[in-house]
Image (tube, rainbow, N blue to C red; front, side, top):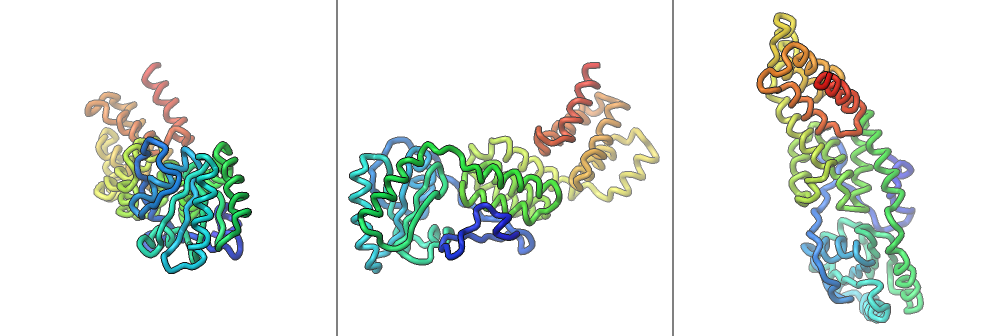
Length: 333
């Protein structure tokens, strides 16, 4: 994917970048989990660590803008800049917070963000980086930076995220797994708590047969994120994908059905395999065939299988919508 396809690609010469990989075949990030939000305003100036970065910066920036100062004890310009930022932030009366990170003690975060020189200052609003600068600036420019940032708290969602998600979803639906994964990764770099991007990325991994890595991505997501519909869909897809691996040869299942149309177990197993292949309409037909022949077979197993498909595909999927209408017509006719 080129930078023109990626709305979050860095500008030429920018030092803030991010690249990630999964499997060695398709691209995907190892997005860090988001710490639970903590109440209370807290101090206007504080230090953070790798472990606390999500809480102190990502989550805190959902309540007010947060400026991160990446510094090191040996950095002369840092010694000039940090007192200026502290002074300006304190004088801003709570409009913004300052969080300082010693990159010598905690190199992981600046490494992930592509910080290549210090001092580096990055501003976060609503869980995403929105502005920043490198090098020591005079106090007047720092004041302008903070004043500008103070007006960004109410800007609302970044329209680039919606555009990236739309293109990522379309790419995944068209089988362009690598491009979809890159776009979901870009969204997660901007907003690590975006459940749609996390679920989409897990789905891309599943489509690439990187099931173990999809499981790792899901496991590292916070519990409240895993409960979101986008993540629930990915979790169900992963369950079905793992189950399909043990279902046997589809040709043998088709032969069993040809020999006995009431071999309902073979029909449902074949339906799962077809769904895993992306042949959703054919999967639905196998399930409805069971329901037409014996609606209540095996404690309503066919209807329950349809509901699992709906959960995995999501309510917006056109096959889900069509099958729901058919199911309602069958049940309530």
